[in-house]
Image 1 (spheres, rainbow, N blue to C red):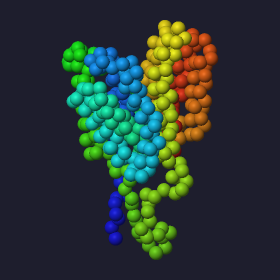
Image 2 (cartoon, helix red, strand yellow):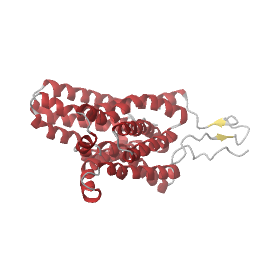
Image 3 (cartoon, rainbow, N blue to C red):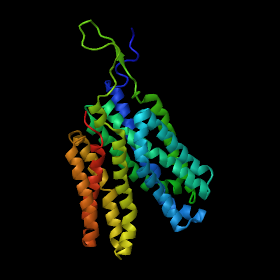
Image 4 (cartoon, rainbow, N blue to C red):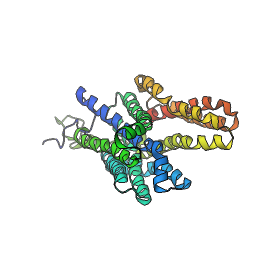
Length: 346
């Protein structure tokens, strides 16, 4: 009897050129998960003026993706376990691209919030599923590929924050904030097309028959099924909770630092603290990429990252403001390594 599917379809990627393509896809997925979020703050004053948003509504607009990311990580993990990680990434990209572009089609306050919610739903769905795919497709390079995904997230943050306004002023117009949504949405549509075309199937079940009566395998053995221990090691629900928790700390700190310093009458420290918390991640991320395989999936470094983040936040609150750059550096290092340890070892 013929096999139901080739044995390589649901397992590790073997061919070198395909490895390169899938690594690029994963990196670009990470890029787009952050570019659509961080492209909004630079044009937020224009949005607030044109739509007459209150300060409360403006704050909620920027916080909505973060809230959805934190709350949606758990159900996203459950969905990934039920339908598979690859379909979850596909659905997530559909929601992300549709919501991003539709925000530019009908620019009213209600539609802006509805479509922001729509795209926000795609972020935890995609980000929770990627670690499972990394483990399946690259069992011997888990740390390296997870680092590439993390690099994509960080580069997406930096590029969107720095490029949006200059591009708008140069090519779109002084008040063309809605067109920037299309600018960042079209790449997601293209990415979705390439993902559906080039990403390997991740959930194909493979059946084999024994080659001889003496074989110790049973007929129609489900080769792709996981043992209870493997399922415990790769629980998408756990991944979802961890992704949401780390992202909540990162985006929460970005939104909390400025008003906290303002309330403490120390607003002059805010630019440096935010710069260290965000910009310093890129060189660290690129540097760690090539040693990330040693970090992936180990329990103790992940616990250490949580302790570092907690200590940094406590230090931020209970020590003099002049030490904020130190706590920002510690916080960003703990959050950065968080991405690698989310992906369990084989």
